[in-house]
Length: 203
Ligand code: SAH
Image (cartoon, rainbow, N blue to C red; front, side, top):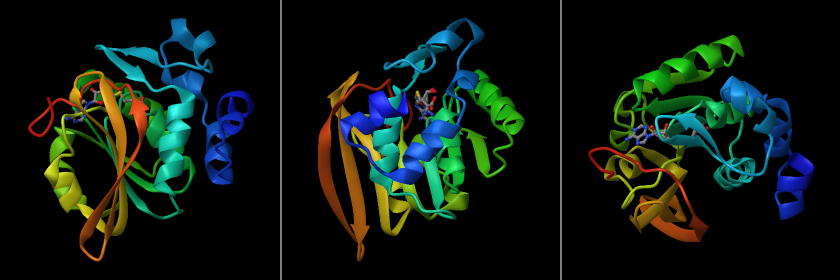
């Protein structure tokens, strides 16, 4: 998976590749789909949601430039796989999911795999996690019509936020925001396709 789908497409970031090698992706999908867990596409995780394609996980993680000890907020826990990758890289991960069953399954899985540096919350992640803010990194793994203002507010100075944004559902541009001296800089990293970000500042 790492050599053929990720390194060959130009992601050379050693800590990202090491984490992608280490986290057992098959533990994050239903038993019937385990044999497909390492294939080059997203997979269903129930409730109309998906675990992202390995390459997209690696790309978003590498854009965030995560260093050990950083406080990272993820919106859209889903299976918990992306949270585990960030945890494996030594981040203190705060992840929010809005669907109760996905939240519970991810909690069980991450505990079983002993990722104790992941903190989960069942809530509308478009509001962020104000009690734990600010965050040095924020990653949204669902696509919304625009970036939720609370997330930009909860981003620390010199922080990086990455989110799929699109005026139409299921078709977005991956946008990276960087906060420098209080100002927000924006870059478009290309087209992606994510499930809906649903909530106060989402669909
Ligand atoms: N990062 C996940 C994949 C995410 S799929 C993984 O590694 O498996 C997107 C997830 O975002 C879904 O589980 C969906 O329920 C969740 N989601 C959508 N809107 C949300 C919101 N407002 N707050 C929290 N989670 C949300």
